[in-house]
Image: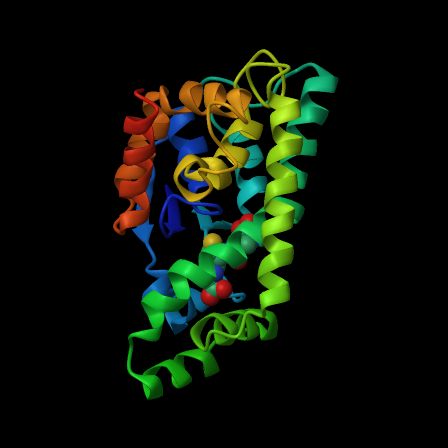
Length: 254
Ligand SMILES: N[C@@H](CCC(=O)N[C@@H](CS)C(=O)NCC(=O)O)C(=O)O
């Protein structure tokens, strides 16, 4: 049995959800409400002591790190291959995954935590929030939550994140306009990994991602949204974030 502990099908949780759906693998969805701090509850920490989402439990084996989960799923299960055989294409799949995981993702995430996660969570009882922060096992995650909850992102931090996101969009446009998919001629885990961070860009960053400035990204997004497994994945979401994906699909007239 494969159980997937996940939140919304977004930056990190979206990757294993979409990989499993693309492969046609049955799994038990364990929705873990990040805004309710479910990931810091003792029963979850027994599975993943870092208190982060997602986590895969497959026949007793515990797997963390969302991008690497896709590789595991592809190597373990039958179904359409999600990693190209060609070494250059496989390198390109991993190159873009790393670029988005380490450069683009953290900056986009800071913007998202500032405009979405912080304001949503801030409405809770202050004492309840103080205790919730205290229970977070990793120091860096405690700091991330405090910063978002108490609105402590500095003007400079947010400006640098916006700069990185805008730069990342330009670099990705240059890459994706040269080929239909992230790795090359065929769909791969690279598309899933990038899409989970890019799926809402036309509504989050309309001044940077649009038909005039980024025709390559827009065409690629249409290709991804046209995949039944991708649209199916958003059904596992419970917040307006998943609804936003449907809005983007409609806006792109997919
Ligand atoms: N590198 C990890 C990052 C996991 C991660 O930080 N996930 C976020 C959700 S997108 C999380 O669990 N945040 C909740 C928290 O820090 O309490 C991965 O790719 O799986």
